Image (cartoon, rainbow, N blue to C red; front, side, top):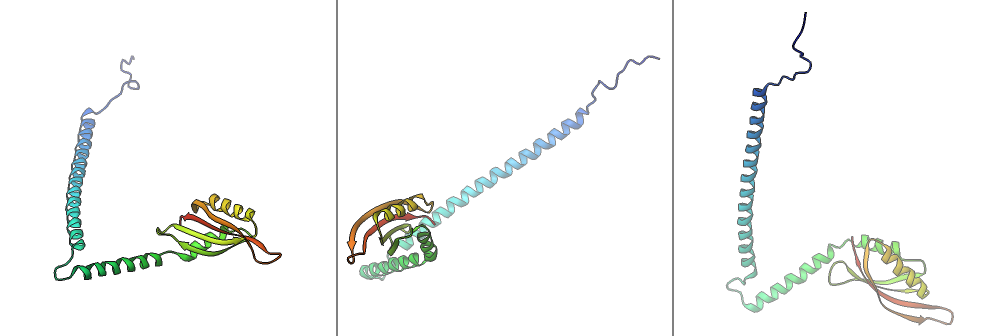
Length: 178
């Protein structure tokens, strides 16, 4: 008995099934891409509609309402800006800022004033130190901390409080990153 067909080396593939499977996958992918394109185009249309509504509302808000004098309108605008600045300053997390300054203040230095600048993250620090070396350590700690940047020594001057007590008064500006 002699076998002429070796079934172990010949591969048998169902080409019809593979073609059907490939066709289904292509149709599904085309359907998904058409759906994505339609979603993107509708989102772009919605975005342009919203942008036009925003500009219309902003133009109405910026214009002076009829029946109100220019002086009253400017007075009211000034009040609104003033109260918005108060609200913005109240939003500062003061305890967190004080904690940041406390962690970097070295022994021998005391802060007498912390005042925020025009922008929310600029601060001016005033204080006293035992020596200029303490101020140098304070500046190094501020610059080394990840929470502070743009550290600048604005002024320093020697002060004499009595015969034995001497010190240095300083002023520093920096930016605080919360």
